[in-house]
Length: 277
Image (cartoon, rainbow, N blue to C red; front, side):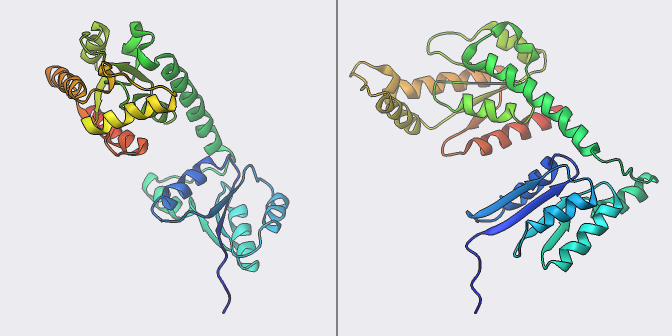
């Protein structure tokens, strides 16, 4: 009996940057419990000769996922895939006839159209990342009204990593920490009143205590008995004060306890999307 390969191999081929196809593949792979998958990208393949040379590099077993604007390249790759004993999937073609019928129009075969969209999205994302970096940890509070999202909460509630994850999705995010005993700046209230989504990140008190103590250990120091930063009773009071603030201003509250950044970000975007509808 022939043994299965130690890892599954997937090739993404496109006349653009491969970003659309790769995101599609990764979204599907996230549904499978697979830890050994090789994913190869072959962008800007726009001539038949280039396509043949690309496929020459792939030996079965391989799943080939592809996007091409021209019908001729789609026909060529399908024929070559079958000839070589590979498996293939065209992520655009199944949708084209349906959209063409609905829109009563013929799709363009101009290569790189997807790449143009991706380039615009790229620059939008870079602008969002730049904004988010400049507005991390309470910096530049004067222009919070330019944010798409403001994340607030007590120290060590994953505000920074969540902000950066959302920034790479194209959202301008400001991270405003809450300091015990200090009222938040009026600019965050003004931004909320102007329509910016303000969201409080919270966490279970015991989990927060462990995270804060772990941070001391990583820094090579130990908290003393008077250090309220890791005192459980003080942490409970901090969290309750934050909750009261959020309830007073009608800010949504998201509990990040034992959640990956991606999960928290998904909940945030659901809230933002529902608010915009």
